[in-house]
Image (cartoon, rainbow, N blue to C red; front, side, top):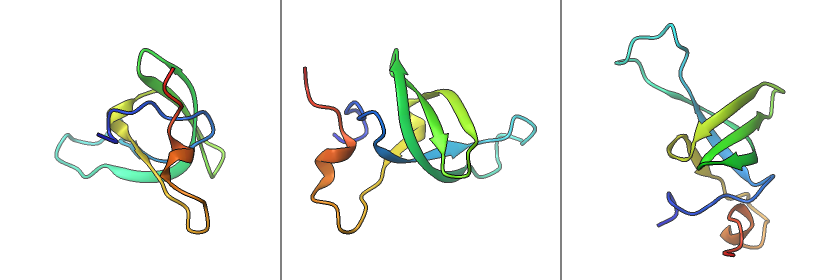
Length: 80
């Protein structure tokens, strides 16, 4: 299941962003970026606009396939 696989560092992702001031029934917005450091299944994300999110849970990240890249494997970390 792709939603449970560990993401590669610098893998392209869409990351959920939910402003703390929003109510729980408002829609989450998704923004493009790169997965960074991972600890306890939470990732630092560097967004394309330069903003950052620290310790985003894996459930808030979606791997992104870029047209012209070889395959999906580039967004996932190799199994150890």
